[in-house]
Every structure is written in structure tokens, then in C-alpha cells.
View 1 (tube, rainbow, N blue to C red):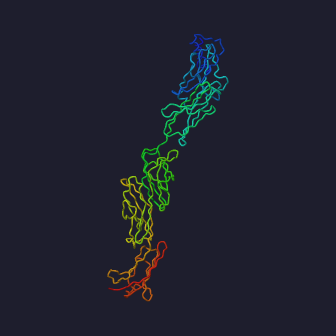
View 2: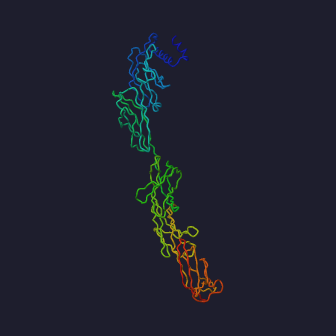
Length: 516
């Protein structure tokens, strides 16, 4: 009748009444009777320890039997903090012959510490106290929850765990164990029981690490934590990182083009620079978020003064430089004017992985267009004869550049623009024949450059000006002030020019007029 009434009122009861009914039912099946007159609960069983089973991740709870004579079984609880008080949630009920329990808590033990309690109940349904003080956790035991933090930039793993609850001051130490890859766990440190963290230094990249923490008490009991694991991933540099070319694009800018293998997780790259080929390279610029190859990084230097050696390196997530490329260098073109020639010279571009195919020499015309003068192989010099440009519209300077081509690749590097000043020169004939036959009919000086200012005066033997021109393209046709032809004889000329840089040049001499 008691059982029927209990089930009849099942939905009207709270969880405490439900627990009581469960105990009565369990007692009935164990003893075949219910002693409803006994009101004294049995003594509480003592938990010896709880631990995480490192093989399964489940929790193992061990306890000592209640010393009371009338014990019908044990109830396992997990404790939850509800409103500041620890409330027991029934896990299971076991017989008196059992003193350990496996809690299927693999998913939970890896996320948090779990608090356990065990009570005994007698044949009358009386249950021992879970804990002696309300809202306290005296006598309860907890698992150790171990968590780790990996700092890929400092190459450290920091472990954090909670103190084991249940042994009071009987913990002798915490023992940290580590496993690398598929190896076995080995103890790496013994930690004072007052500490709950440990730092492992010198962690290499791209390796699997696993850690567990064990609490050891003076009775040599051991409570193990969950296993915390981490693969120390760090993206590697690209399989191939190639500096393709160094192109001077302005008096203060250099474009460094590079390519890298597809599929690399690296998207940040650094430009490394040095003044010497074998000196230490320093990062001068980092470009982030490069997602296509080839790519260009621009540097700001004085391109007509020094050579600079370059490498391109990948930059990992810790902003560390890894995996640098081959060497590159800017071509420094220099030259000098020697009478009627310009001697050009530049550094050999030996940094192309496949070698140099040729160097092409260019001169800029008066409109700024590049005119190919010629190409050379296995040499780094060139001589340009200036006689072919005299009388052209060059304003006192000539500009050159060199282009170096790599064999079998299509890559090329460009030098700086080299400006060569042309010496202002005035050449004049000593006679001319203004007879209109189309041969030697005009007298005009030949100039090495087109001047900013020009003046030519022609005097007769009495010092009277018979011709004046301010245009270097307008020579004397032999007429006196544009009228009659001059008589045969010797005349005096005076030519005055100002070059582009302000240099002034004068020349005075004699010119003979005759009519054959």
C-alpha cells in the first residue's frame, strides 16, 4: 500500500520526496521490507578521492563504506551552485557492496571541475547528510580541471588548474605531466600545493602537446585532471619565395617585385635591405594582406647615389620574419662626359637566379622617350658618341638608363636615370659662299647644345654690325642687314650663348666671304 500511494502522489512531490521514495523502493527490493519506525540516518560515507580517468575522460569516485550497521545502499550526487548554495543532483544509486563509481562525464570534465558527494541510506529510507554545513562544501571532493593557453609568439604554454577540494591541507604537491605527439606522459615539474599555474617555455612550432596535472596527497593518493592538448600551429613560409627584379622607378623610389608559391597561408611580407651584400639585412617595410603573386613592395632611397641589396621575407602571425628570398640589388648607372663621348658604367646584375641574358642601353630623346642605343653581353660599360646629337634640341644634358634581362624568364631590372651634362661648345667655319647655289650659302655656328640664350653679331672691317640673330637656327645669308650681298672679304663674328645651367660662353673670330 505504501508503494501504491507513493506512486499515486508522484507528481505532487518535490525532488527531496522523490529521493525518499527512491530510497524506500530500493530498500524494499534489497530487504523485502520497510522499517517505517527507524528515524536515525546512517553515518555519512567518506570520499577518499575523485579523479579523471585519463583513458576515457570519465570521472571515478572512490569512498569508504559507512560504518553504520543498517545501510541499504549509496546515492551519488554531483553538486551544482544554485543561488549561492550547492544543490545535489542525483547521479545514481548503488548497493552497499560498491565503493566506487564511474561517472560518464567525459564531455563535462574537459570543460570544468565537477564537485561530488556520496550519501548512505538505510532500510527505513533514512539518508545521511551530504554535507555538514548548509551552502558549504565541507567533505565534498572535486575533480581538477586543467586548461592551457598557447602563446605562439613567446613559444610558451601556460597551464591553469583549480585546487583539488576534499583533502584540505593534505596535498603534498601538484605534479605536471607532458606528452609530445604520440609519446607517453612524463613528469616535468612538481608544483607547490599553493600554486595553480605553470609555464612551459621553449615550445616549438607545429607539434602536438598534451598536459595533465595530478594532485598527490601525503597518503600517496593521486587525483588526475583532464588532459589538455594543443597543436602549436604556426603557418610556415611559402615553399618558394623568389625576388624577381629590382626596378628603379624614380629618383627616390625602387620597386621590388617578388613571387611566391600558391596555397601559402602567409599574406604578410617584409622588405629587407642592406648597404652591403654580406652584411646583416634589416626589415625596412612590411606589407600586409598580399593575396596574389607576383607582388611589388616599393622602397624609398636615393637611387642615383648608392647600391642597395634586397631580400623579401615572409612574416608570420607573430610578426616575425621567416623564410627570406634570393638576393636583389638596384642597378646604379653612372657616367662621365669625355670630349665627344659619354662613358657609362653600372654594377653587374648577378642576382638573377638564371643569369643575365643582356643589358640594353637607352638614351632619352628631347621628348623624354627612350631610344635604344645598343645592347651588351658579359660587360657592364658602354660608350656613346655625342657627335650624332649635336644640333639637336638637347638642353645641356643627356639622360641614360640600363635595362637588364634575365635568361628564360621575362624578368628585367631597370637602373636609375643617369644625367650627363653636355659641355657647351661652339664650332664655326672660317669661310662660306652665299651665292645661292645651295652649297655653303649660310654662316651659322654649330652648338653642342641648344642654349637658353643665343646672340650672334657680324661686323664689317669698320666695326659696323651688318647682321644680328638671337635664334641659333637662323644664320647669316651674306646680306648686309638683309639687303645687298656683302662684298668679298673678311668679316668678324661674335657668338654668345647661355647654357641650361647658367653657364655663359663667348666666341669671336673671322669669317671670309667669297664667290667662286
